[in-house]
Image (cartoon, rainbow, N blue to C red; front, side):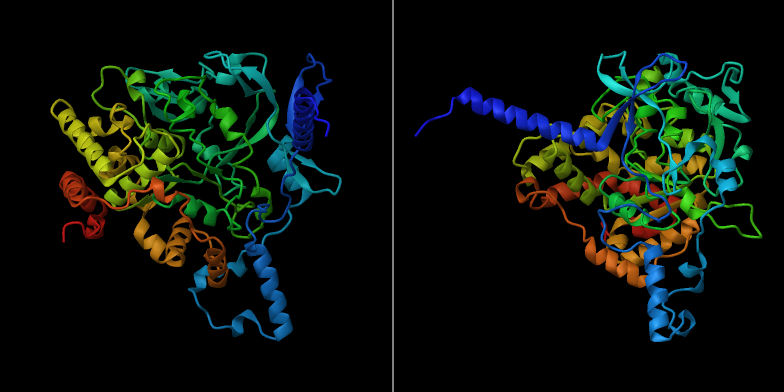
Length: 536
């Protein structure tokens, strides 16, 4: 038996790996060279297909979209000789999804509203272009990254037009907005010099959108989310996002965990970066990224009593947006607590924004978060996790918070970047402090507060409540039953990563700690259910 030299075998393996890598890249990207008047430079263009006029392009779900469901329902009615009116109604008349038929918009309307964002493929389907990107280098740490195409880094950071931004001792003013000066300190200035006055949002869209110039000076459509799912972490926000993006009125390209407001706008990439590690992502770049405009084309319907032509809405689901304002101390030295937080920024951009918030038993949420972050090594944890280890960590976190309160306010201690280093996630279960900040800038009717336990016990009723809050039609009951059956929530953690139970002394310690904060939450939301029966 003849043995092949080891180096030959290794060479063959390397060649095979290289071939598969080239094949993968060639299937997903193409490298083109600009041939215009500007100096030729490589441009990465995403070659993945865009959705045309189907409501959704997600192949990961086998359940039907609402459009497909409607078509099949009409076909069944014709075959059986029945009509929708003959069927026994299972929901309120206002939830009738059949009244929301969408059409293909006229070419002249598309060109007028979307402008140069829109191109056609060989079958005359409309496609939304992604922004031009180029390969660049992060000036902070020298890492390669994709940047919007421009002649210089200043255009990327988009410091804004100083002629449009006027500041006095306390406030700044731009495009008919009064902005807290502290917001300007931690936010790309183009967020307000590029953002038009609210009254200039386009009447053709239900979603807040406007026309503006991109980095190349071309007219483009820019949009921001209609609503935000802001948290809390480990309270079912991923499940809620997955369901809503299947709705014909909600863009399936909406963002999950974009982290723009809690991280990227301040130059932070990942949670564990305790200081800016890159340039802040410009507001222009974020609003024209494609994800907030995709599928809006498919929601065209002309109503005689409304100027709105495109009825779709977009969302951003970042569950840490409610609590993550970390390293605010870098921007506001000398303050005992943050002068501004994420809700201040979002409300300044669009005070009509709608907010969805999910809360969970604070002790259960802590346990779930600790298990999750330890399993995925977000924090350095002593494994295996045990009830005794968890109790000791909880004791340390409670002591640290109580020591902080001797020299600081409750709010200052909750937002303290130092307290956010703890794997127990204690700070994120102090709901009342965060909820109070959002209620300061948004009226109660614009904030929908869900209870996680109620959501998982009756998801159909819970989702109906969300749809009513957003002003969109409810999902058909049969559709929801099929979806929930095919998408049962599964916990991916191994048994070795779970805390088998919580010690009674741990529960008593946390119940005593959370009591005053839950008192505040109950008073704010006006319902004793937010005690989670912890004190019965």
